[in-house]
Length: 159
Image 1 (tube, rainbow, N blue to C red):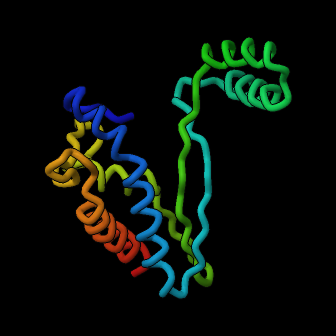
Image 2: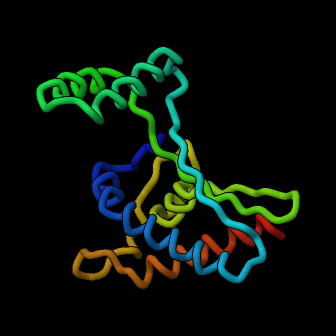
């Protein structure tokens, strides 16, 4: 779980995480195109440590019901879901070659791009160099930082 140094950092990270994800994924694609490794993305869900198996199953059951529910029933189902733990999405990149498989956590890479220093459990501060003078995302700076972090992470894993 992230702890933000300030509310401003929380607000800025909310604006920056989707662009970070876009640039990280694109740089992974660019970097892995020339490798003789197979790359696959795996989507998982992460539950808080105190979530019981019964709660997990209840969330899964309600989510399945929600897909086919009538509008009035959907409201009641959403209210029930609001009272239960919510899993966080987790995305992994798995690189495989021969009998070897290595894994990268895509969100961890995004956090390294987004924040000045990402070192859990310390509070995070958004990297101000990723914003331009008008307050918009500086896509060039974001791409350069993402490229460096992705390249280093993949190279460390496969070499």
